[in-house]
Amino acid sequence: MSRVDAVRRFNRFYTGRIGILPEDYLGSSHTLAEARILFELGSRGESSASELGRDLDLDLGYLSRLLQGLKRRGLVQGKASPEDARRRALTLTSRGQKTFQTLDARSRREVEQLLAGLALKDQARLVDAMETVRRLLSSGEESPRDKQQEIVLRDPRPGDMGWVVHSHGRLYFEEYGWDERFEALVAGIVRDFVRKLDPQREHCWIAEMDGEPVGSVFVVRKNATTAKLRLLLIEPQARGLGLGKRLVEQCIAFARAKGYRKLVLWTQSNLAAARHIYGAAGFHLARRQQHREFGYDLTGEYWELKL
Image (spheres, rainbow, N blue to C red):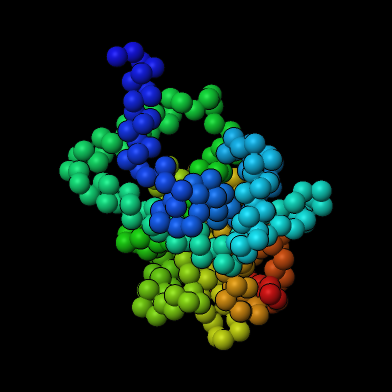
């Protein structure tokens, strides 16, 4: 068998194995192309039609028809970008977000079932082989935008909460010298989130790149009209890719969709990168308070955003 025939044989096998041929992809009313658009917008937060067409390698006329269909069903919306009025920013509606989350969960379950039939060592071999295929077929050096698109925002899984606590403790010690009392504070926030979770009005997102968590953010209920943004974290290898902006925008969209009227947060005056993200997202500084925490004299800041 020639190499060409071998690749074609693998393509036929794999497309059938992962179920992308039926029109009702993942048991939904959506085609694979529609589901992929929903996934891209759900993962990125927003995108323009030209960016989607380029990255998905879709004809713009065909893409336009797909987008119009998704808009008619109330899943996708478009508005002028605040950074560039000429750019039309496409985002998911609250209904679109629910559809994306349903499709994402179904896809995850199907892959879990696919892997469940293999021994752990064979699962590792399969994943390594897939990564080899991806890497060999990628054209040249990955650009920062390529890396940005590979960062997926997903729901938390067992083990993620421990990662959130550990990563906060490690990074804030390495970068600011904060002691173990900060890690204890984070552990308490995570504990309360898990124990008292109201899934209808609270959520956590984990950012994942190359199969590893690289970021987190939480929306927690404060009262009937106000939610808190908590535990925003970006690992060093994922910084400079717009991930902080995506995570904060995800929180804002969620809080609006759930009917909150205000989103608030607590940060410190020396956390310049985080403060820049909050200011760019529309938050304003409400008040400051001097305090001594985590081994240092700090200035706590309370920021809020009217929704």
